[in-house]
Length: 326
Image (tube, rainbow, N blue to C red; front, top):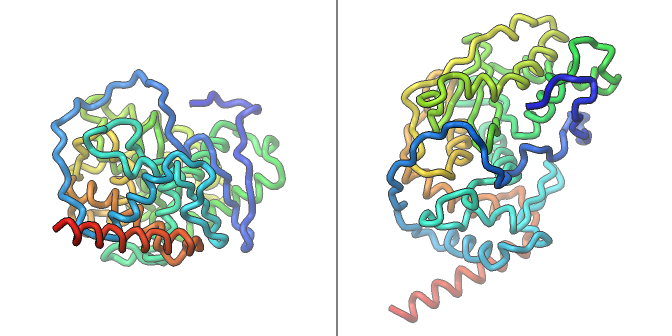
């Protein structure tokens, strides 16, 4: 984590058409292969997922595999919202469970793209309690950690930063819950700023508290909470800085080394502030990995019609090949 200083890294900002701050891809947007020294939960036996039966999912995975090493091949593209997902970023979705490891871990680029689909589906409602929620990707972590690393005086804020701080606070306070996608030491989990319960709720499939105690999450959220404090002070809600971090017990756990990002998306889709709208299993997560690829490519947001057509042709070929061999 960065030490607080006036020379803290500042994520670059772009503004959308409606003036909302949108941080460009930062350090948390993709995995690295660097080794870390923290204690990890012991590996458990990995169960093979149920076979994929949807032909379009099969064809999508086959298409991604064929272009997996291409950094110039756009598979998902949208202007509003601004999305760019290239073939190499989706390669992890095609790696089989037998090769479980870093290459299967989902990048922040793919996670952020799927969050756009969740936002569209959910609108202003989330879960059975119809609460207002805000789903935020990894770029928000960069912004909050930047704010949290600055000295606690307004003189270190530029006019633009000050305006963005005020806008961030207003955006958070319009919702009952704010979901943060957190990447800490190559592991994704979700932190929920729950205004009704006055706490940060941690949703994690890895259960690192079992081996590291709450320290793992306190370290992961330290600068994020400092950034939230900065924003809330601007809105006259400084007491938010003192809200506790609470680990939610009894959640589904991963039994592989690479599905934490997929679980994070499930938390953001299903958590209503008190419980999951429905339960799910590890097999469901394995199936979701393939389904996610198909959903992204064939979503209404994706303007890459030629990619969709190529995959549809691939689907027809696979169906014909299967029929001929039977």
